[in-house]
Image 1 (tube, one colour):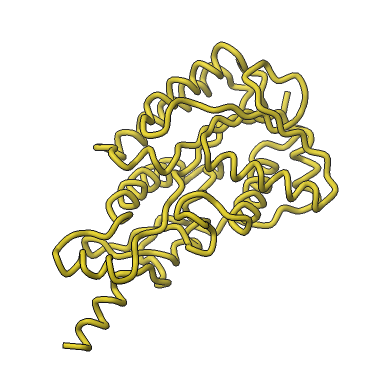
Image 2 (cartoon, one colour):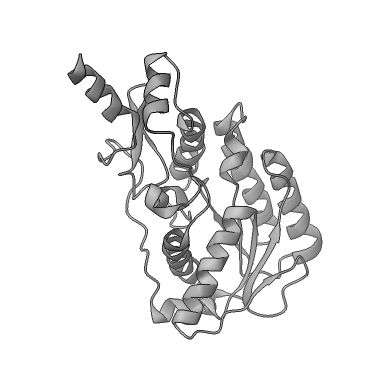
Length: 270
């Protein structure tokens, strides 16, 4: 009986098994080079987001100070006249469609094609009660496609949904023994459905910023649900189970700088 208890307890937590048959083709580089910072400093970037986006921007600002690089980070919805990371809040957490609509309005009415790069990131909270994450992914893709057709001078960068940790320990074990799921299992499974839809759609283009892949250690931090591995946020990268701590900000910030600096070179911007 004790052996069964120990086995169940071990199965309640996150683990480091490699994900089989993952659609993640390669690990995103997580260290920005001097050339990356130089490229980034010449780009006009529009970033629609909520709280985790603030974490990432905070990480980029800290990294810029470490590298003694001048990178402008400012909150604005106005037309972009100078290089920098221009960001703004979109919609309401828990209402992802409001974010798609608000990002569309900002890009169409205010920024109107003045950005070299534009990206929209949903929040982990948008999936807690989302009934159809795959349809949400299709709506997200369609929104970026519409904007890209209207503003061909702007590179639109899709972003996977960030993850959360899952409940572990005695309470999680008791839930499993009662036939219930620990907190975080269902919502992370929804996020994965959204993320896999984006990964499959953009598989032949090196444009997707896969924040979920990085947060899960490139698929190494997972739980098992319905016999399948589900990516979860590494506990090392967060202090509250969802938002990024300093280590997480540094890791994701570095990766985003590298990605943005290479997805659209300054000499390609008009």
